[in-house]
Each structure stands twice: as structure tokens, then as C-alpha cells.
Length: 191
Length: 191
DNA sequence: CGATTATAGTTGCTCACGCAGTCGTTGGGC
DNA sequence: GCCCAACGACTGCGTGAGCAACTATAATCG
Image 1 (cartoon, each protein chain N blue to C red):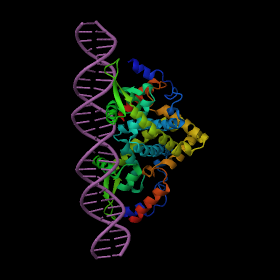
Image 2: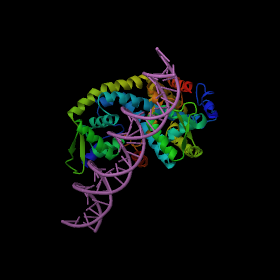
Image 3: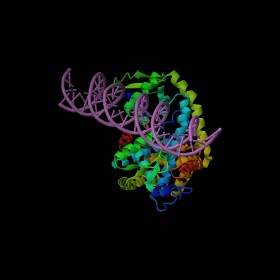
Image 4: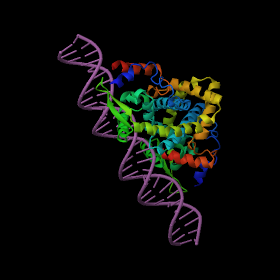
């Protein structure tokens, strides 16, 4: 118990303040800590709200990406590329969501290897029920925390970091980059 | 089959451009997308580099938090609080790292229920081998992507979002107001 | 054409993680 | 001192995810 207190009491605002000659004081570490903790915080809020609507974070991402695609559908592989899930992961999440009636599979008439995941009416309804609360949480804990210029600066910085570091696995969500496009192009060509 | 053509032919550069009145164009969604993709991108880079040193991201976080704590040790519970792992998750990751010789358990003399996870010499060495490359990656893909003012603005924004939304990720900081803490705590546990 | 190669999706295997239950320990109330 | 609720750590079980192997289909090259 004494140790428990030792652990918490001397920590003031930032854990790294105290160890002056510590490598962990490095501002780079701090920067990553901020980014990752902001992400973790928002993730937790999202998870809690999505759970109220019976969706996991992955399922929400899947249904969202499908819903905003033409025809409310994507090929399994393209879905995998957009979600940073493996193709087997997509197979299984689509399995679950199909079982729950949120999605269906549809055969691709031109390429019998491919199949589409399509959002059902029930899936769209579920998404529509979920989205307002989701947007409200974003506003409450993220965008609403900053005045417009600060938010713009934040997003500008994030965009540059994202453009530099993002693995093509997560690309394509709100801004499609050239390599992704080439990828999708070849997919389209194939059909 | 009419669907097939609808799907690909008219799509030009951005598959989402056509749904002009689309909810997914909402700037809040875009903002979250940027934050999450930046995080995912950096995560992937980290994972690749850590793998070269035989560490997973979770293991790196564990050993880092231990190494910067007094005595290079933390109680299992405190470690769980800092890592957003459950206590059972901590039990298991410490199991693995103990098996690999990076950590040891040490009984707490004051409370026989508690035990410490302590970084071994081999663990410190492993960490020291890993850190330079880690810092270089941060610089290469994150901090070095922005000029100082832009970086400062980014970090300032992130700090505000983190302070608002963080689910107690910085356990050991006491600048959390109680109501927030309870809330975020339970949310973090759940995820 | 026919053979080789590449691609789409699924499945078996394994592992990491959380939840809930358990056991030993602690400390407060009587 | 005794009892019992709270606490710290560990374990059984279920779930979700990736890798690699596999099947079926498509594209390529001779």
C-alpha cells in the first residue's frame, strides 16, 4: 500500500516531468504519447456508444465503409484494404454481420471468384440509428474542444503525418491516395 | 448485373464523390479519420521496427513504463492501469516476458497480495537496443514531417483532445477530475 | 489452345485479450 | 480476536484476429 501511494503521489501533471535526464523526456516520446492517448481516449468513447447499438468498432467501420460506397457494397478484398483487416478477418466479420442480418453476400457476376458484401436495409437502419450519437461524441470530445483555427491546424498536421506514415492498409477512408487508386483501378479493370 | 455496371464504370477518381449530400462527408468524420489513420500508420511503423528487436507493441509499452518507473518496477495492477490492459492481460504479458528473461516478478514485502514486475538487466539492454530506432522512426514519420510551429500547434491540439477524452491512459497523473476518471476508467476497462 | 501463374475468398491453427470466477491476503467494524 | 467485505493476482473459457494452406476462378504466356 505504501508502494501504491509512491506510485501515484509524486506524479504531478506529466509522468515524464520528474526524471530530468531520462530518455523518456524526449519530446518525440511525448508527441507520440499525445497522439496515442488521444486516439485511445476517443476509441474508448466510441466503443461505449457503439456498444449501445450492438456494434463493435470493427463492425461500425465495416458498415460505414460499405454504406458510403456505391451500391452500399464492396468486394471483400476492397473492404479488407479499406479496413486494415486481413481478408480472413473480413470473411469472419462479414460472417457475423450476415448472421445478424446487417449484411449479405452477393456474387459478382463478372468474376466468379469475387463476392460483394452488401448492406441490408436492416444494416442501414442500424447505421442511421448509430450515427447521430457517434457524431455527437466526436464533437463533444474532439472537434468541439478546439476553436476553428486550432482545429484546422491540428487537422493540417495530422494530414501531413497521415500522408507520410499511413500504411496503405488504412488508406482510402476519406481521401484516396494514388497508390490506392492504382490498386482500385486494377481491380476495376479486372471486371 | 445492372448493379455491376453501376458499381464501376461511372466511378472516376473518388468513389465517394458522387454522393454529394452524404453524411460521411461530415468534417467530423474526416477529422476522426485523420487522427485514426495517423495513429494506424505510426503503429504499423512501430510494430515493424519493434519486431526486429523481438518485441510486440504491448511488450514495448510494458517495458517502457516499467523502465521509467522508480526501481524499474511497478505493481501488476498499476501496470495494468498505465497500459490499458486488463489485469489478466498484464498477468499474461508479464508471463511471456518473464519467460523471455526481460522481466521478473518480485514479491511485495508490505502486501503479500501484490507483486512487482521488474525489468531485468537483459530487459534494459533490449530496451536500449530498441529505443534509438524507435526515436528515429518517430522523427522520420511524425515530428520531422512538420516545421516546429506546425508541430507545436499539432501537439497543442492533441493535448487538448487528450485531456478531454483520454480514458485514464496516463494513470499516475492526478490532474484528472474524479467524475471523468470514473467514467473513463470503466470505459477503458470495457474496451 | 494448354500450362503456368496470379487472384478472391474461405478455413484450420494459433495466439492475445477480456470477462468472470477463484484463492489468498488485508484491514475495518464489532 | 473474529468476521467479512475489499483487494491483488491468477486461471478457464470464449472471442476475435492473423498467417498459411487450400480451392476455385481468371489471366498470361508459350
